[in-house]
Amino acid sequence: MSFTVAIDGPAAAGKGTISKAVAAEFGFGHLDTGLLYRAVGRKVLHGASAIEAAETLTTEDLTADDLRTPEVAQAASKVAVIAEVRAALVDFQRAFARRAGGAVLDGRDIGTVICPKAPVKLYVTASAEVRAERRWKELTGNGHEAALEDVLADVVARDARDRERAEAPLVAAEDAVHIDTSDLTIDEAVAAACAAVRAKQGSLNFE
Ligand code: DC
Image (cartoon, rainbow, N blue to C red; front, top):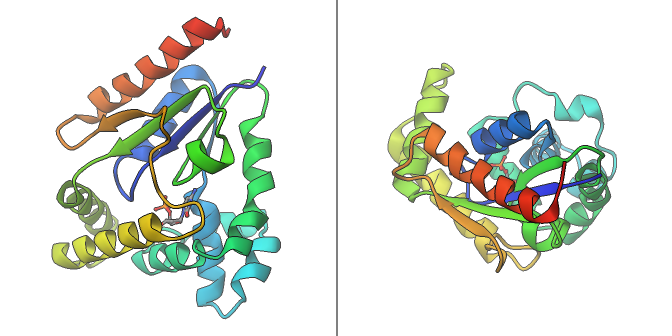
């Protein structure tokens, strides 16, 4: 039986951490859909056409070791406004969502466009300052040089582009459970997400 958990929200709100923890807790598969857009953005930075890159993505593209850089993040957000790029990635995401045993997908449009019927939808947010600080710690912790104010400017610019685009903009689904992680520990945020999943599993009698 398939069971989809859709997790959306702005950059660095904690979606990735929550998604991985929920997937581990319930034994579901996890797809970080941002990686698809990052892989396309990375190929564009290397000179490819965005639409062609999206239509011909390979597993190798998704495992490149520089997908997490700020440059690739901005490139991902730019290619993500292109309708044909988004369309090329829909089937893969929906097939993953239907996988037997359950799936967690995190991104920007999972609960609104990719899986509008998902039984569990979470909208994970945090203030821009908190998100920038987390991203900055992650970057500097991984040996990248970065100034906090530049990271904040990047996060704000990416949010604006993701929210204001015409195609599948970042917006909470009407029936999403909101989790603001600004003042939560990781454990508290994960517990809130797991509680939302459990509540729905109970009402659907999912085993
Ligand atoms: O989640 P992330 O930061 O890795 O995503 C990178 C960019 O990809 C993000 O700024 C917008 C785009 N994206 C999208 O448009 N839709 C998704 N479902 C996931 C990511």
